[in-house]
Image (tube, rainbow, N blue to C red; front, side, top):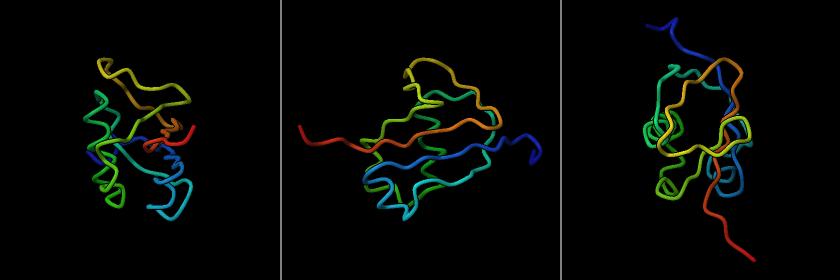
Length: 89
């Protein structure tokens, strides 16, 4: 149902920011539940420009990395950080 979506802020860092051409955006997503891979797939359908780095993206919600086994329920105002592969020393 359309009314069953929540408003979240997507934050893009490094290569993700470069690919998206912006550092943040609002998105409407179903609240879940999600496991990390399902949430990533949902984000990739919303942000297709991230496909080149899809295999290496790490997600964090409200400044906390997502545990791959934990179920995630999104709520209005959540911030989802899209963190690309990191390099450097």
